Image: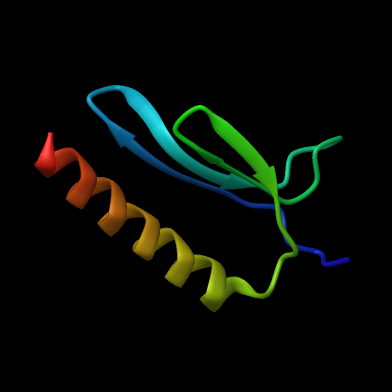
Length: 65
């Protein structure tokens, strides 16, 4: 358990394609495109690094389309 309240999002053309957060009732979770999954919060720096990796992945995948 931690004391942080956070929401991190990556929005492309008004569509949220990535979100990390810990809203009430859901706990720590990640929404990647349409799929939502839980994870163990491992610190602010690691969460920001994970966000950056996911953004880079989305940009690679979308540039291939």
